[in-house]
Image (cartoon, rainbow, N blue to C red):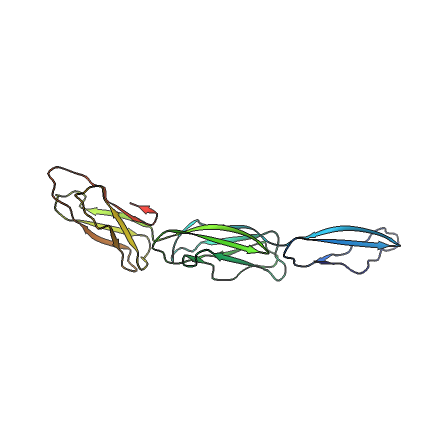
Length: 232
């Protein structure tokens, strides 16, 4: 863990001498005892050689659209990396949602490094735990990976006679992955949308018809579309 010269020469007229203690890389904090001897008298002192482990892990965002938004993580070490650099392991709890593809190494002389989190296309929302580790210590962050955000849902017309179909359009902020669908709900038995509508792969809009039934008096119904965590 540490090395010292075999001897140190005290120059004439002086009562002390300085010498270098070279430390090595350790995986756990290690206590080293250094002893000096002169004319049968010895004195000792201790040095703690510290392991360089992860003390911080953060993301620039907490939520990302799978396959389109790729957060940047920052890993922080206890101290500056040694000349060979400090490798850091970053592990995902769900590689179907997010991974760190490239090796993460803190450069020599630095105590932090950025890494890109690659997200995968998603049709549902879900959390991923990302854990950064070095020398037995780790820090974890949670990233929520979501499908393309629903940004608009419109009905045309918004008023109609019972028994007439109305048009509906759902719009999302990124091209749809395969299998993406919006859940449709209503508050009146006289409005009959499909329970869900699917987007074509790569599409950003979905247009569909909603049948209504004849009524004898004016009625209102709230029709909503939901994708992931967003309802409009």
